[in-house]
Image 1 (cartoon, rainbow, N blue to C red):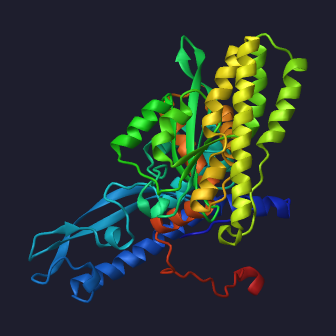
Image 2: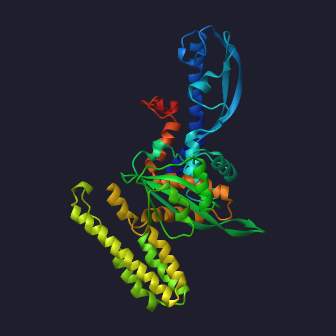
Length: 443
């Protein structure tokens, strides 16, 4: 690797020298240095393999290896891209042919980019649109790529796959929180259409959030059917916490032991139901305030086994009295002709005190509101609505899964990439003391 340096006789600024040197190293020198290291590793591997001193790459114990041609491949990394010749060897015993270097550095058979570059592109694309993402990467000194290339990489990546196996869900009861949001997606005749994105997250007993799935252009019933086909099952004692979106609680009722309707949504949505029936704020506000007070049944924070039976009986009795008051309120709405309000409250009453029943039966405390999934949806919606204008449902689903995995559990996201990139401490690179000398000045 040669370094050439030319200067003007009228002088130059230190800033220009630093800028030019950084540009050379970021765009070419690092890639060439990487290529040189790989070439040296390849020579060592071939020498040891041909002399029978490399058992880790042997395919059998019967034959010996001989050179069998080579192939060239362009490899893209965040440090730059380069073309690398890979030598092949063949085994005289079993006839296997492979590239020792390709196997040694865990490079896939048709892989042309590093996993670390894919991670950078995927994360950048999940924050902003593709054009701006590749511009920001290039500005940060990473490999310049086109936004078409970035788009193709994101659509083909498998880092968005969500694991919903028993290993992730565990054996302890969880909280299941579904929610949805709108976005302007792919339409016809140059006009965007209103898309629908649905998300489900889980929260374990340690308070850790994990994704259960994202879907665009899919109904809650279709999602429930998909889970049924996958034989999804959650531990006994799991609770479904959701708002009053039509069809949501009915679709997921079979997957949870209890249901909990979000108390905040009950109070807010009741106003809209009364307004739909012709009522006004002056009619609904006293009812909303009374309902909010009736629903505020707090549970003891200490361990369930230390709560006295008298206190448990008191909480259960208060719940039953409140349910009776709710029935009276439904009757009041019916007599006033508020059919929409009566229907809404009748449906909401089914899961109004699921958090109390779960506590009484399993001793587990769960929230009365769906604020956690609301926070996730705000982060997800903020990004999707900013970058997904005119996208297809497939593209939105893909990026939504990536955003959800990154936001819901950042630690698990990093662990996934560390495992995929096989960063286990098998490489050490150090730079020793070096000195540049000018021959003329030396004289």
